[in-house]
Image (cartoon, rainbow, N blue to C red; front, side, top):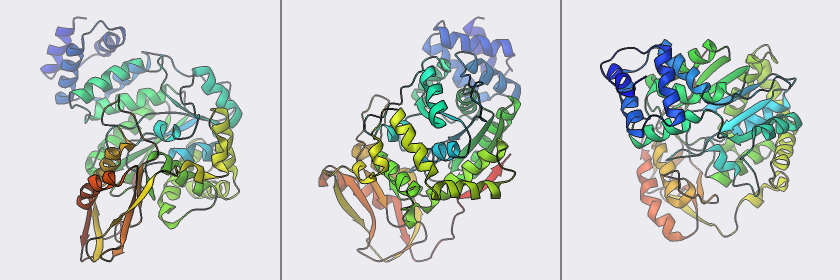
Length: 438
């Protein structure tokens, strides 16, 4: 089909047939469409949107643009979790081994961080030697041995998505629900899942800051998953402050290990709570548990008896990382890193946190990337001593900056001062889980 005809049709607000969506994705995949033609049609989709039929056709065509993983020979229910991304959002590192310890096979295909949000692959690569570049065969072999694999997207898995995402990002068209659904669900459906739990963030550090927008995205994702025969549920969760205690790649792995070792600090509690909530939903959707209450109790027991930690240890060894971090998490913390206190300038309560600003500050330290080609300093980051609603005194520590040089801390201090608002009235507590879409 002629690219100009399809561009003109969507430009004028008309609806595409399944065949027309398929022709577009074929053109993206085989290179017969030029980048400017792809961008033009994506812009028309961005402006006019896609109905449910078009959206499903987009997901199906993207899914069929590459290979689909087949785990039918693994005798366990297959499930995964996906987060829309946030600051300090490290739950995948607990959920995958925890779900595996409960009898779920987890083929977790993850991504890298870009902008203020962190990426699971970057966190994993802060572990010495850890290999996230697994082939399809290696993913299956790893799951068979320890119950889960944590890997990046292979070249043969939904290749159309890579091109589409890069052009959407370059042309400022990321915020489109149908295109987000196409990107997320095509990759997750390619994992050959029985069940999928989605963590859709909302708040100052979320991609969808507005609750209404987050609800719309969650409903679209759930509808698409169920339409394709995957039992799907979404939780809308709070990202009005960093999740847990640490922000930064090695620091976040450290936090997860401390939790799985039973050495959790109070500030880490939300990380554990959300990890258990999401894993419990996976157990219910796969039929392992009859309800969330029973599943949550099972998950907590698997944390407390060390089963989740043992699964993580096995996985690190299988994926060529250094498993000694499971016995001594402190080895993740680089000794040459300076720890600079970030202090309050007045008395009051933490009334607001610009979580995106905190993520941006860690990026500025080198802990994230603004462009795909950027390199990452895995050791830098930020520790959150004070959370929303906490009382502070002038001169008291709000957090700690982990950096290479004091000049780096000085450079981001203004970003952090702008991110943390201190007022006279204590704000209401924000619920970690705001809504469940099933």
